[in-house]
Amino acid sequence: MTVLQTRYLGFDPALVDYAEAWELQRRLHSQILSGEADSTLLLLEHADVYTAGKRTEPQDCPVDGTPVIDVDRGGKLTWHGRGQLVGYPLLHLQDRSSVKDYVCTLENVIIKILSENYGISATRVEGRSGVWLTDNGDVRKIAAIGIRVHRSVTMHGFALNCSNDLAPFGKIIPCGISDAATTTISAELGRTVTPADIAPRIAEELQAVLPRYVSSRADAASSGVTDLLTAKKESTLEEEVSR
Image (tube, rainbow, N blue to C red; front, side):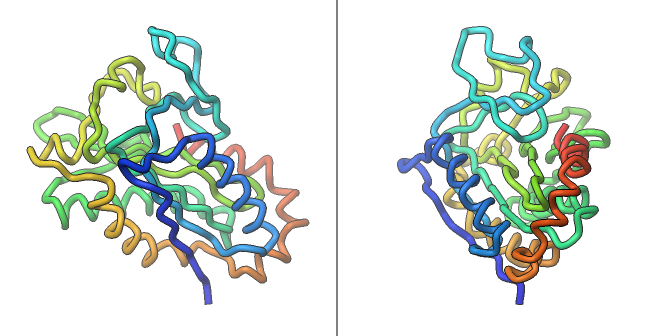
């Protein structure tokens, strides 16, 4: 039976330092790859930080000199912080060709929950990852997706704007997209919805849909040699789905 563990790392006021969570991801990646740990979903709320993916350019960075952490995911510059739900699914994929479908599933889960639980109509935008609101021609991004796949194990994931201040996005071009705004669940509803409020519902839905992508622990342990041969291909897929 395929197992997907869920771990809640911390929510306001117990915000999670980005560097500490990244180090945990790396440790789990190694353990999942070797078959020592099951695929795991991490849910948390970060202390405020800007992170730069592989496609970030100098002009994308904050103009006021705010520090930026370079990370190994795809995509460009973004912000994480108080009021934003971050999810890191670390999955050992059964099928390396399923990466794009996996990203679509993350988007679909967020779209479904926004609709069913909050009455917010969200969608995808062609050629752009993440989840968007497009009513009345006003395009607003409410969730970002940025992943890495290394030796068939996924890292990084999604960030859903719940109750965060939008001002930090005003210092950058979020994800390199200059022709759209950002929004939050709370801003759309006119009431506060925190990451802690929505995290159990996100976990429930991801537990229902993600196991179909996951190898068993025994399969993961036996696939290390062949995974070495596919690293370059996965790197290309990662860039395609995280732009």
